[in-house]
Image (cartoon, rainbow, N blue to C red; front, side, top):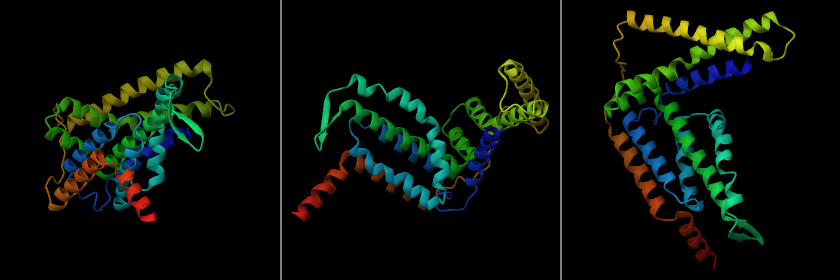
Length: 270
């Protein structure tokens, strides 16, 4: 029950963050989406053994966290949801790629562990970038940009409604589980014997709630198009935001900044 309530809170929490009035929130939604896409493409373009080259891209989420005043801890915890899937995909890399790639203090590290670490870093950076986009823009503004990019309205509508009404499904689930605990107060969890019937009840309640939501939308003039209202003006600040980040991404992609800094520091020390 507590987990369902927390899930509902997390969905509304992202919506609340999107209503802030910071420098990042004022950036044009199209620009923020474009920067995020470029960031994802550049990060994913690195080779599986290139960890050092990924380090400069850590600054992007850090700066966005600071300028947008988005709390780090809740967003970081949400990004950990995909961690088990990534571990499941990359955990076999050290098994199949056993060739020594680097030696550090007489410790032999195989290419499998390097590629596994690279996969974890890429996953963390990309998921954080996506969550920050939602937290600083809002789902409606993102959908508006998608419609401007000529994404079919049926996909955009399904995307928005799924995100928006998943909390409704969670609320129905919470009510069913609450009713079960009221009838079986001494049980700590849901009994396996009744789990099937509870899932059926949740499914039926979800269908009924979906019909009522759809009827309400029809009464309010819904005709298949999901209308959005947002300020789509392209300001000088938004253009500067795009130029600065794209420039940084490209420089960090084609020049190994940590290696260059390391050589400069070593040269100064010697």
